[in-house]
Length: 338
Image (cartoon, rainbow, N blue to C red; front, side, top):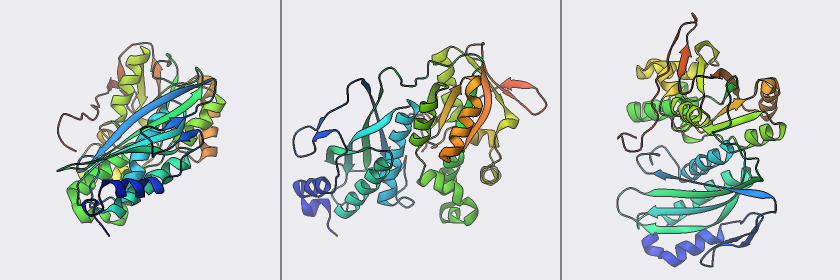
């Protein structure tokens, strides 16, 4: 084991570069001042970036270096999936303390690269900076799509069905349990929630499969909270939404977490979260086809409501058929808390 200070910047960069395997379309990898990439004719580029900050987005006592890298990859892959695009190339920037173990840094890059490779992407370079205090890791991910075929938040129409991948709320519950219970959160009953937080699943394969079939009119990643994502999609498309409270799939681990945390189940499902899932507006005629595609891809997909012609009106219908406003603020980077 050797620290970054002991090895020096050039040796650290050499080790990181040696561990990379550039993806298809890479003309020049790291070693020059910039990477050179070659896209295909007739395809649009899709670019996103996201960062994880120590103590806020991940807790070192709970995350191995590989897990930090994988989670950073999935955070960015989720944005590419929400556009219905194919991830291709990535740049990794790291702000790390001089005493950081060099092997751990290579392990973080290895975990990130493995997660990217599962969806057909790879690293082509990056940057390392020395910091004091909290460490951070930032990824820029470039994807591509058939020209004019990307999903956006703007294509939804009244009457479209709202579909939701995975189990939003689980990751946020896992993070809350880890912070509130400490080591006791490692009990078996909390494992599905901790797994959702520490090792989230990429939905790129699901998005690719749905894109091939058609029927998705609009999409958004829900990592800042399902309620906030729904509001943003409706604002962009000029529609409203009605969520059916009895349409949620059964989720015993999340129900248990609501009791353990003393929180309403709806607050966990709709509020701030760390779930890299997709909210999709699907044309009614494609509902069953999309359900079958998701099942074939091994991805949970639940239909939780529909869009309405009342712009900005977000409503929740309870089991008795009574409607009330849906209130679910999303995650705010500047409001404090983790």
